[in-house]
Image (cartoon, rainbow, N blue to C red; front, side):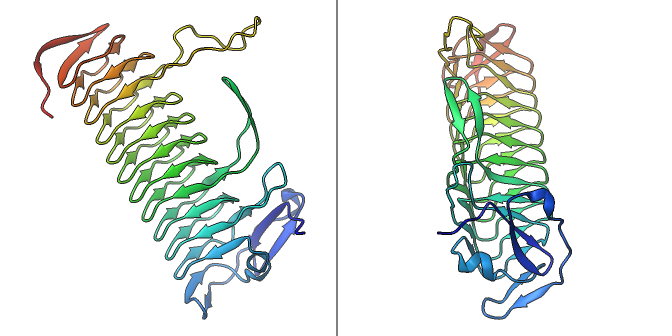
Length: 295
């Protein structure tokens, strides 16, 4: 049985410890792994690989200041897999169950695959790990935080300091801006653009080619219930954005609203009712105006 709490890539060797504060990252030399032709800013992986907890493809580059944490809060160990040509920057923390695709890039200070702990509406997260995927050619910019169970498709960019909560899915060829929050269990299709400083509430669905402008606010709780003394739990009804819908900067979309395929919402609108396919709407509250948006 393997007893591991944290495993760190520090200096010239792998080290294990029960307290991360007892270790300090050391800068190692760039070495060549002749058997895989991988260039990595570090020394040995023998202990971690021999334990079956790390698989590294060819041509990878990993900072010596990367931290690998294969064990979750329940003591379960999960393998970390890094594909060919992937890069992991200084200060990144990669958790058990991470699957990093070929040519993907994790920049400095990213947290990837962190098990979530604590209460969220209707559920308590216990710190259990999960498989967390970053697709081939995708990029996590510096400071991004991606919780366990998230799946990010191929050729997708996630901006600086953006937070993606547990069990969300972001499809292929998406662009998610900086300092943005995607709450739990959201579903983005492919070619979705989500601009900076937006808040995407839990369980939102954004189908293929949806465009969300900067500073979008979405709401899924119509009665604003939180920690109710009578024990009531809110009935969450998230908004939905159908294929090709476009939402202007600074708009607010209320719970249960569906923005139809190809519909266009003007900047600064407050959308309280569903908007039909292909229509233009704007205002507070938003109303459908004459004419149709170009699909």
